Length: 250
Length: 159
Image (cartoon, rainbow over all chains, first blue to last red; front, side, top):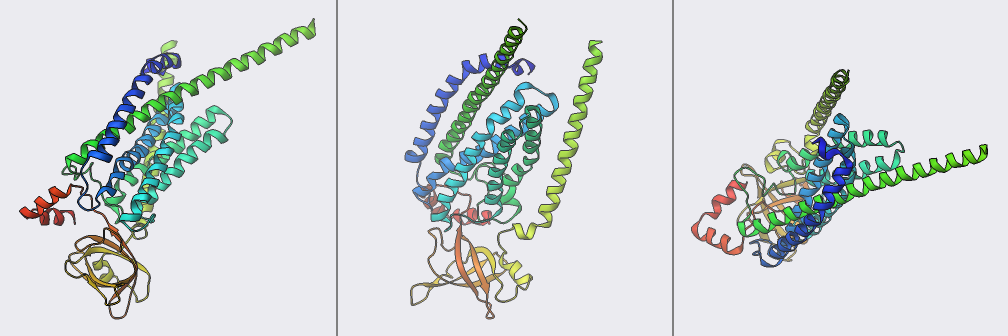
């Protein structure tokens, strides 16, 4: 693992693989969404209205996956002090926040015609909203604390403590009674979605996952480059000061 | 010398690991205790059994959840007032509601109602929300399940 923690080597390898990930993401996204939105059969109760599932479920799943990724990266950052760990967590945060917002938005659009309300303070919806605020809090730490080492440490603590919310979101529908229905895919006794609907959904989830990998690699690259630019700028400023100092003496 | 530095570094790593693990378990424990204590307020609704058990006073605003009893749905002559029964298998509560019903509202389906009980034991709902279950299937599959009489089992399992 240490090999990949070297920023220069990471840059070289990730630059090589991101274009491929990008292409794969685009292909799977088109296949998954087209299959889901146009080919998959109508639901026996909801008709075509259920098709928002092909965006809602992948977005919701990724909102939790992304936070889990951040928490693990933060753990690695705080214990092993790998130079890339904190950057990976930082790079993932805005992507996760967008997934969370998308999950809440599509869920709300789905809720109005089916349940009869855009929003209800049940355990699933509320804990997902808390997740959005955790992302905002995490990103705010990086912006608010000037000292980078300190910012990384505080942000990592926010990410790890906030990770407690992930199992709460997942099991909220089992632990408490909610308006939101229980899990349809990851549940004991197998998925309760017909295979004709499940396949496009799984492809869509995979596409969202690859999208995350692509964008997070891009964002880590740009964070590393930004850091290098700052380093070079510092050196230029220092160099100028040295030259000026010598001129004064001369 | 180098190995000495290495062992010191790995000792510090181990210390940080234990620190993180201990603090995380404390956080999990604390959150767990809070959630257990708040269980009643986190749960969205009471089921008919809880409504009967807890002797909710008349006029207290609550949420009630359950399945709409088959063949219990009736429309008043004005066409806007509905009557139906809601059950959790053990207890049944009669409900009256005036307003529009969501698309998914039907007999045998889960609903969440907002409202209050009256002295006659009738639950006056001010809002009706339909609960969706976790099953998704094409119409044809459901039709053939119904034809073969498997559907009832599927439904009872999901309760």
